[in-house]
Length: 326
Ligand SMILES: *Cc1c(COP(=O)(O)O)cnc(C)c1O
Image 1 (cartoon, rainbow, N blue to C red):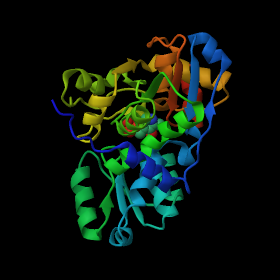
Image 2 (cartoon, helix red, strand yellow; image 1 turned 60 degrees about the horizontal axis):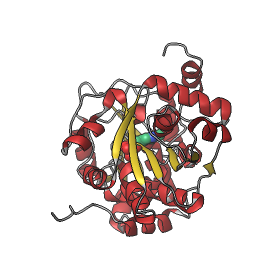
Image 3 (tube, helix red, strand yellow; image 1 turned 180 degrees about the horizontal axis):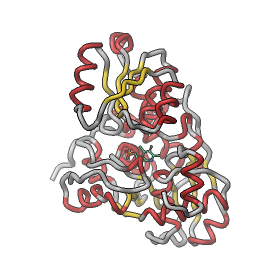
Image 4 (cartoon, protein in one colour; image 1 turned 30 degrees about the vertical axis):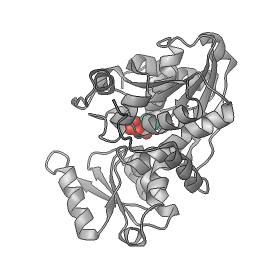
C-alpha cells in the first residue's frame, strides 16, 4: 500500500515558521514540579494562552493571509467564526494591512463581537436560525472579491498551527509523547507533521471532549464521522467533523484520540490557576486534562502538552472554577 498524499509536509511547517516569526510570539514552555510529581513524568507545557490574541490560531491565520496574492490582498479576507479563529483572522489581517470581514451569529457573546471589531475587522451579523452561513459567506466572497479562510481545513492554516509543536520540541528537546487539543484537527495535524519529522519515534495523541468524540470515532473507523454540535464547556472543540485535509494527516501520523469529560476540564483549569498561576480556557485544557487525570500512561516519559488558548471571560472562569452551575 502506498502512503496517502498528505496536505502538508514538514517543509510547509518550517516555511510557515519563517513567515510568522516576525509577528507571532514564541510562547514559553512551562514546567511544574507539582505536575511532574502528580504524573511521574517530565511535562513540558507549550503555553499558547500567551500567544497574540490568546490562542494558537494566530499562527495559522497569519500564515494563510501572508500568502495571499496582491489581488487577494486587495479583496480582503473573510471568515466565519464566533471564537478564536475570528479574532486570529482579524488581528493577522490588520498586521498585514488586509481588510477583514467576520461573519458572526447575532447571538454571539458581545465581548467576542467587540474583541473582533477591536482588532479592526468588519463584523457582519447573521441570524443562524434563518440564514445559511455558508451561502452567505459564498455570496459575500463573490460580491466583494474576498478570500474565505476556514478555521482548520486548509493547508496553510494547518502548517501555521504546526509551528507550535516545532517550537516546543526545539525548546524542550526530544520528547517521548506529544498531547494536543482536538477540534477540527488543524492544530493536531500540523503538530503531528512537525513532531513526527523532528522526533520520528514520538507517540502523538489528540484529545477531544467526551461529549463530542467524532474525532475518536473517525480515527478508529477510518472515515470521517459527523455528529450534532456537542454540548460541552470546550467551546473551541464543538466541531461536528474533522476536515478532508486534516483527517488523512491525523489518521496516518497520530497514535490515538482520547477523550476527557467537562468535569476533568474544570479540574485542570483549577490546577493551572491555583498551582501554575495561569488562565487556560476549557478547550485549552483538553490535552493537559488527559495527562493530569491519568488517561495516558506517561510515567518516566518526557511529555509535550499543548495548552491551546486562554480566552475565557472572567465571569465564566470564576463560575467554572468555583463550581457553580453555568
Ligand atoms: C480552535 C481551538 C482548538 C481546536 O483546534 P482545531 O484546529 O480546530 O482542532 C483548541 N483549542 C483552542 C483554544 C482553540 O481556539
